[in-house]
Amino acid sequence: MVEFSIKDLNIWFGSMQALKGVTMEIQSDEILTVIGPANSGKTTFLRTLNRLNELNANFRMSGKVEFHGQDIGEIDIRMIRKKVGMVFALPLPLPLSIFDNIAYGMKMNGIKNKKRQEEIVEEALKQAYLWEEVKDRLDESAFELSGGQQQRLCIARTLAVEPEVVLFDEPCSGLDPISTAKVEEAMLKLKTNYTIVLVTNNVKQAARVGDRTAFFLSGELIEIDRTDKIFTAPKDKRTDDYIRGKFG
Image 1 (tube, rainbow, N blue to C red):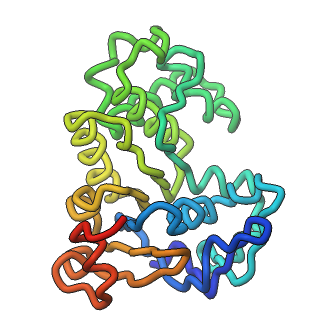
Image 2 (image 1 turned 60 degrees about the vertical axis):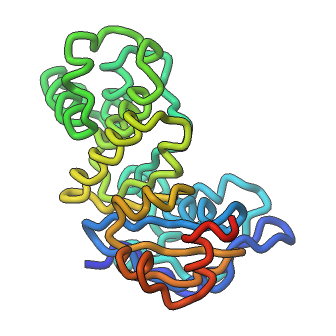
């Protein structure tokens, strides 16, 4: 099933064009990794999928982005943000307990039953591979967690509102290799229930976790294919040069 259909997408911020004629589809229950050098349009593309670019007053777009066949601009923005969650590069826990960080979104969505909250919190933390590390510390401040644990907490917080798609914007950029491995392990498990779009500057990470990979350069989608093909037999020399570290 197609989650997102993107057709001739162009995005500007003022006079600067960030994306140029991007056309592609994102499939259900896959990890799509998005790679490319700085200023290639990766994060702009990601933020298009849950309408975060609209927070910029200079934002303008043409083309079409459809979510489940419906123009994304016609869907209530609160519903989009619920269905399409996002995990940012830097973990941003709320100044609350570990439990209340996870429960925050569901409370906002009207889930008041304490037992139901406890069930959802436990399941979200298990999915984020954090439950065993924090199950006896749920009343502690989230700021007591390590950086890697805080990032997995933010993943759990996103999962607790039951999205269909999870966007990751360089979620391991500030993490050590052990924490990175745990986040990657969580992503690989999550793809059985969620569609994942991962923007990463780490081409090795893209090779490890991606089902398909899209390569962006200067706002253009250069190519998109199965990850094994992108990394062994790319169609475009620029893709090969980037993967080999010749630029970027």
